[in-house]
Amino acid sequence: MITHSARDGFNQLLQEAVKTSLSSSLENCFDMTILADQSAIDEKKIVILTIASLLFRATVMIYFTPDERAKMFFSRISRVPTDEMTEQGLFDAVAEYGNMCCGTLNRNLGQFFQYVGMSTPNFIDRRSSSFLEAQNYGYTAHFQVDAGDDYRFYISLGVCNYAPLDFQVQAQAEDTSTGELELF
Image (cartoon, rainbow, N blue to C red):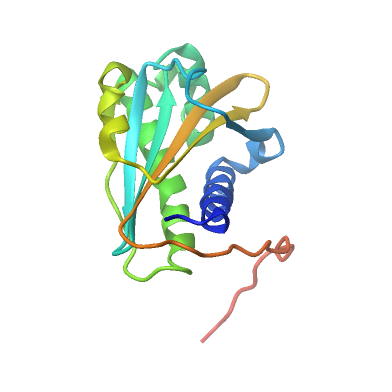
């Protein structure tokens, strides 16, 4: 059983991770909405990362199509000139974005669960995604991410629980400090 507060917590932590992982120039143009199902998702490729603890396994799936729009978007957030972004460079940039996003989610989930670890990114073709439905997720959520006016991608979250899951994420105040140098 995954409680409603735990489901809300997974959603909130994932949304924070997605926002944190976008470069600061895109954060103001960022919008993420929950979809009723995945029928709107028609992207060609999926990068999959898994976060696991003794109590659950969360699978994060980032859907994208390796086209010019994806190259432009991921070259911008990875700070690589678009004309230098090869197909392999695009896959590397998407994998790195997935690593940053799931690394943030992993770190934030560590506040609630012990022994949380993360996999490396794996790519599959969208046509091979039917196995994801066989995972017996106790909770799934699908998100549409609009990053500015020029790019949209999708993320799905699936959580398998091995024991009852219940945690609550408190809303955090915005950190307005710019950081300080501390000498030892």
